[in-house]
Figure: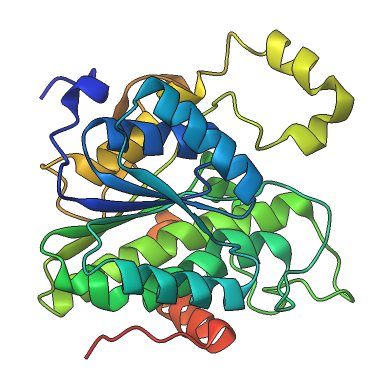
Length: 307
């Protein structure tokens, strides 16, 4: 297959059901749009329903018969994650792809509803709980996939088990917390895929990252200068549509066997067409992955149904 993988390579998806978290903007919006274009029933799982409605309207304007719908999901609130999962399973009896896309980046210190530092709580623990609560549908759907969206930030990440959720009396670092959450995405991906294979379950877990893409993820760091800075760095950043391609490929490429990691194929994986890339050695540490899994189950009180 050509390495210039584009939306033209997306296979027909009619009959499939796909969830995309954080689909109201950025790469999540682009992913959801392209999945619906190919016929997949696509659920835009959004925290802000007003923004979700605007996103759906944009999709329908471009694709009038798009089989998409919005459902409320706040990954920073485990009650919301539970409610979403319950409502989803009332409506659907299959789940072909779960795209754990939503995320926050280097935000000021704050806690989730459940008392977790917001970046680890939203980027990892919320998605871990969501995946676990939808585990039964995933394992009952032939060839299901879980796609976790990480970033190059995982390379400076380190799992700090002593201050995993950065209690207020610990020194908080936006960058450290972000890197930890993105590393957690990959440790979770590879461990989940190992457990699928060990249990002879016909499902896979894969990961992707968007490179340097022009989205609103870091606008809070730029403040009022965001439009100016984005213009200045536009020659480095790729569009959100291009940044969505690694995740889309991870979700639909028939050659994907699990535990794959996709990213832009250009210099330093900053931009370019999606290819298989290598994550850090730390992200493949099986002992850390098991320890993170056990801690995540304890904190979320969600256990997967593995035998």
